[in-house]
Length: 369
Image (tube, rainbow, N blue to C red; front, side, top):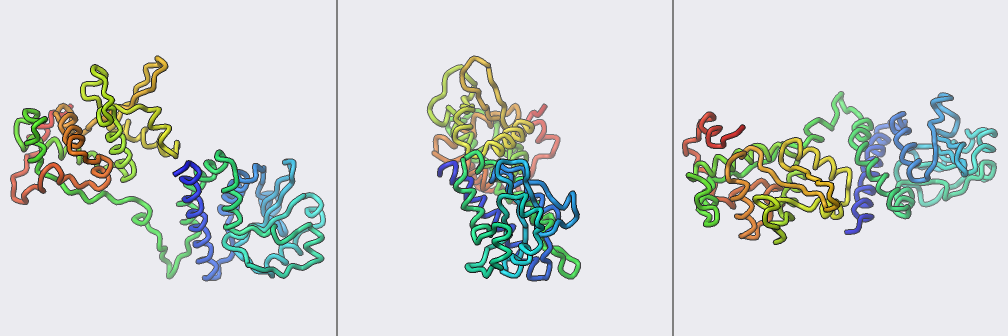
């Protein structure tokens, strides 16, 4: 998938999500668009049109006919932002535009948060008075087309704006039914994953890792310690961590002797070039670094920086050596493993009545700091 494709799909989905919420409000008789939505589209339109729109309702409450205006750019534009797409609404807007505003703005648009109608019966005299034509009615489909035709930097900026604001906007647009809101924290916050643990018998019996653990129980305790920390991460971050492990020099057969004891490092420039969303990439790297899953090293020698992989929860055990080699030799994907959190590839699930190490013994087995 190209970088444009990676951004455009989510942009269209996010615009559709906002439109759906506005449509649901309209069916319940809530056709007003609050200040938050006006400001959101002001910022979005500024990115798309490279404009300097301001909210006209700040300086004059409920400015007649127009919500957003830009008088400082080469092309002076103004927008009415509405949830109603009817000819009646468009004509009402045209009638409300003052003579002064009609003379001030080069282009006047109606932005419909939804889909525009196939046909409009415009008031000819009013449309001519303000220089308004059918293409000046912009629905979400037309807005998306404008975005798709933009430069990649604009598309990326729109994508990041929508990603940053979508959750807040959709919650703001929600209407209470019988005093209750459909959206709850459980609907927008990711749950802890379901985890399939392992008795680590196959990991312990693995030839290459023979002698790395004193017992199967020690291997299981080390694996569980790592799983306990891994399950705290968001799913996409876990998946990204697995992808990093699958693309280490060791996994790719590029390991250089003496570089790292396990060779578990990734070329940071490779990661940056392959990742389509730099904002998400930086957030994931920060989170993984803060929880000791990765470290970032730049020697400043002109060579690519390195991202090394760590195994918090299994510190001072041999899991960092046993687990990667086990996966690599069997051509198993760490990306899939960390995403699904099914660790039975290392051995069957623990027997329910198997004695569990006491916390103190487990801490000793893991030899944590």
